[in-house]
Image (cartoon, rainbow, N blue to C red; front, top):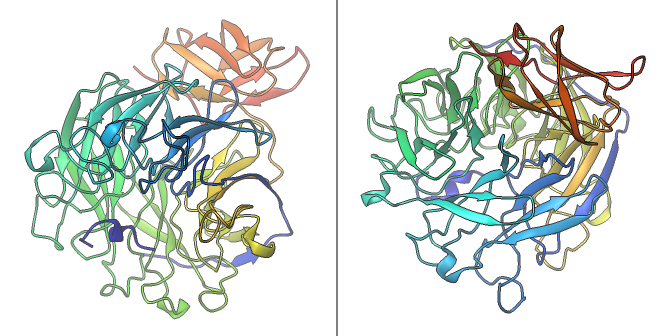
Length: 513
């Protein structure tokens, strides 16, 4: 299950108990059938301005001319889906000769402040032939108009990076930031910045210190970045000095600091602090600490050769605490608490963290507290033929209606098209109520902010912390406003009627100087 197979290269407190929650309400909204895409591997869904969900599928799709199933491995699609489960294919990748428009969109999309979406493809592009290497960065509108912004390997030796694996983020400067697990000066990955018009700058080439596999600055970053409240970026690598990967901080100018080297306890694969952190970090509110998962390491008594993975907390200065070691119940692969999380964590509006595991044996959705108390909310393949899905590899999305949405890379209703089903889209109700999101989540006084939510047409007040703001209702799912003068960092609230419900943003809005 290790992603290094795509290439030819390859402190702690533990006091967490896992429980199994009463049955949660999981609904399979859609099953892929290959023609409309397949295996949405690391596709974390994103909610658009219209309230619908947008995402990608790594494989499948149809040929632009024949209309038949794409015969190039990993062509892939971009799609839109309503909250009720009606899916529309927006774009079939590899629609252009030699896949110069990209192929294999293995990561999800990011919603930009413009309302458009930005993403990456693992392969294709103008510097490669057919389904081989390189990859692209693209922009796609909500109606499916795709623009290829950049093709990797545009520099000799792929010094600009190759095969981007993770989703982009849009930073407070308006630019996009991401990683590649290949290419760069050492061939072991990069951190890059790219403008909305496609100008790319390489900020760091990994393993610029040492010689692989001993790279103090890390190697093979499969995960994307998060921009913290301090303006810097934080991320993880799958390889590093101790063989278990790293957590790092990098400034917008490209100065990188390694905060933690996994497997600093023990010798790989016996890594009590975890190994291979393959998903992006999450900065939690209000603590400001980061939370993440490792796919391997942890407790070798789970009987998986490389360990079953962990959930960890790390401070901005690098102090790491292991909150949970998976398969602490049962014996691998039958682990009631799950095993081998490929997905990252999401902080729900209740303050707890939600995630997914890819093993045990069909994967789970779980909730974990800041203290490490883990509850299994759902175990996949609970239905005959895994009709409810199999192997959730992507980080969950909490919609503004309060429910969680996600994808599985296998299972579903069309097993004849794929060996183990082509994957699903699902929703999970955990009893949390509606809220609003701000786009962006930080800004200066006077700057435009979009507020996304549900049933916003009867809004009467918008406040930044306690500061009233003028607003305009655009649709049932969108309000436009500006950061009022004198506003301070705090939650944004929306009042729907003078005496009616008040919705709070899921995270505080940071007012920038």
